[in-house]
Image 1 (cartoon, rainbow, N blue to C red):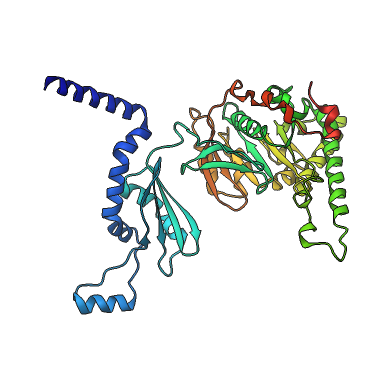
Image 2: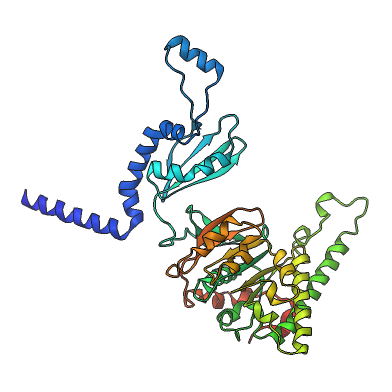
Length: 430
């Protein structure tokens, strides 16, 4: 009996210690059963108190009065099966007539407190149906990415606050702006992108005006690298000519004859046959402000030419399979002519911790004004935390896990995958 008591005490202490050290384990053992019971028992009352219940149909009201003579109560949205996940719960709701997903989104904070979870997130599934994801723990405190699956220009680079992976999809969002102060995690975000793309048949091109300290470790996998503004001024015209050659290839393919099948008519490289399709090119520009800074009149002419090339690539590059990833600490109109026009072409926006509110407005103010406050509240002790948005107006918090340069050695192992792009040969790093 004494031995059994000792085993139980020691087991309880180990369980408490493990639950304290690993919040996900505590959630799985304690939080998940409690939250499930709480949702099942209080669902109707919570929906009613949050103003999400509606009056029943006339037929149902007449049936209740005829059979029970009780007062007719309001009916909550019909709930589907509650399914547990590794970080919380999820279930679907069928909206009542007159309701919309925004009604539930506005009550997400009240639902979070009512059910005692870390967060409640609503996503539309189809007209009239939404999915509620209940997250029990702060998944951004210690990021644990799911098994990475990177293919077809899609790279999971971070974890969203709703426990879903944040995937950088170049086919859907061709160009992106990434802002962040020093030690904010911007370089870590860049590392994940490079290592994810290194396994794919894609040409990686870098412009790193910090003498190459950020991109040089990935040189074995890069097709071209410029480490100062002078080299960048030589590289960008080459990329523009490559883009023009690809448009000539697409136009030649569009010589449509009367018997040409519809599937052979294309307006971008992805409609070309695999044997004719050129490899996609992803251009990484680190510290883009260095391309705008000038000291002499000659520098101004070089700056204007480089900015013009970047704007042309941003406007026309998608159909030619050329994608931009523009990174910097600040990117606004004060950089000079063309900065605002270039920023307007960058559909995706990722804003890490910044030094002032105006920098957050440069990244997110024109697409998601509500996200500016969230970006300004990022604490310095949480590197890698960022706010991601796009021109649709939606935004979410994300966090990139730590990735050391030693772990990024995949770029050496995949050096054989560097595609043959003759125009970039003079810029291939040694």
